[in-house]
Amino acid sequence: MMKVRALWPTAVQSNRCIGQKRGLASAAAWEELREAVYGDTSTTTSTTTTAPLERFDQFCDNYRHASLSALDHIYNSRDPTSLGQRLKISGDYPGLQRHAPVHHISEVSWASEVESATGAIRDELGRYIQDNEGDHVADDDSATFSTDFFSGAYGNEFNGVALVRQGKPTDIARSCFPQVMELLTKFDLAGGNRLAFFARQRAQSGIPPHSDCTNYLYTAHLGIHIPTEEILTDAIANNTTNVKTDSVPPCGMMVGGKTVVWEEGKLSIIQNAYPHHTWNNTSQDRIVLYFDFWHPDLSMEERRALTIFTDMKREWEEEEKGGFPGPPPVDDPRLRALLDRYKQ
Image (tube, rainbow, N blue to C red):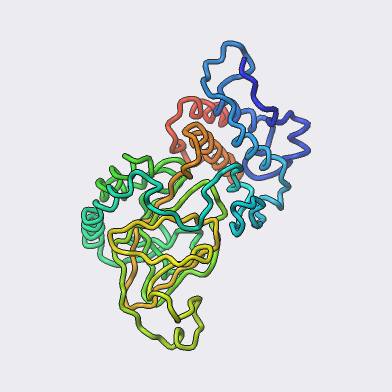
């Protein structure tokens, strides 16, 4: 019988450590998660082939022991190799390396193929905009450009076309962007708990400094339309924007103190657990294809385990609010059976 690290709580431990925390809120919930990740390890006839995942177990252990207030707390990374990252417990995966704010495209094998598809990707977006009345903006995916990203925190000037939400392709992606989705799916860039969308930053606007608080994902931006013409508005001239105007490009991003300049047809790869902000001091909109992907240090089993963790956590949170959002995006029979049993 496989031995699984003893992080999964008993009922007594659960009452003490988890209490009424959102998400994984009972001993039964942790047992469901353990069984989905490892199979039924209580018997010698378990058919699971998953070996113990020490880093994942520690990640769950940290979450389980956190107080309710600690779950929303943003703190500086305690890892000396990733100083400067701002994290939450739900996004702080232990033992990862390669913590630079900006990464070279040579670290991923699919970069050249994605970049070479820029023309086809741009064409699909152009057809979508032409077929959907151009520039309708609203706070849901029914709009041509939705503002419903990152809880709408960045206003109407930051909007986009949703392709993947929480690892699940949108209806728009399936019907209007077959080439984009084929590319993302081919390289496993559209599953898990990830996000993909065409991100538009309107002219003369920017996003203030913030962190996405998760270290186990990287983020890629493929330049689709990148303006280069700078205009000097009163706000910029009076230095009331988030951007210093000396020696900076007219349209760009700062990540962990490193300047990133987008280029059309080129990828930029960042670790957005570091504080970052953007600016577009031009007269045109900037558009990039934004997508999250797994940190390269994660094994395939860790990626699967993190997908299960986030899917089940999301389901239980929805159940606490009332009702379930439907099947999770991960296609895992064991997880589906466990969730169906939990609903009963």
